Image (tube, rainbow, N blue to C red):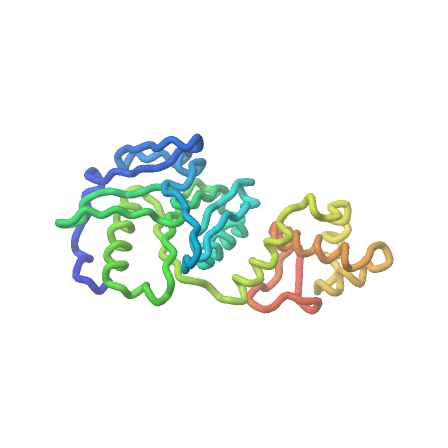
Length: 249
């Protein structure tokens, strides 16, 4: 923690949360009563602005998990969204989901977390994304501590994220380009899955199906099945023909 605030407790009953519903209307209520479903299905609580000279790279990502656009304010946020979209345990993703307003000691804090994730088991994860250079800033740490206490009071997980294995992130970023099944020769899916039970590598699957269809048609199907989790590979190394692959259990 490092700022002397770790012993301080936050009374969540004094904290309010503002969020934007799916129809664009703002809602506000006690933090302890904030509805998971409305937040998960809502819009970013603050408006995004683009202007010449902006240092951060902002945009919208179409998540396969939800079929909705998810906003991001930096490429680091986009990387965390990609990992969430790739995670089979995540079923709902919302960005800038709410603003927390409440007392922290003798000051009033206002904070908008970056991501709101709902998992298959109903668990909620609130994520704050920060560049590694800011993770030891005392003001950032104090904000993290306050938000962590509030999330713990709801039984939610609070995550502070500044990056992951670059190879993993780049592989997931690459696979996300194959997340839309309508762009693939989906009739090849059964054959690819069948060969995945016999072949040890991506190249092996392509070679086994070469007489029936070209690699240019097979490779996208393999990559989509890796994205969807039907096939499994070690994504901590660059993907290629020699990448080991197997069908998911």
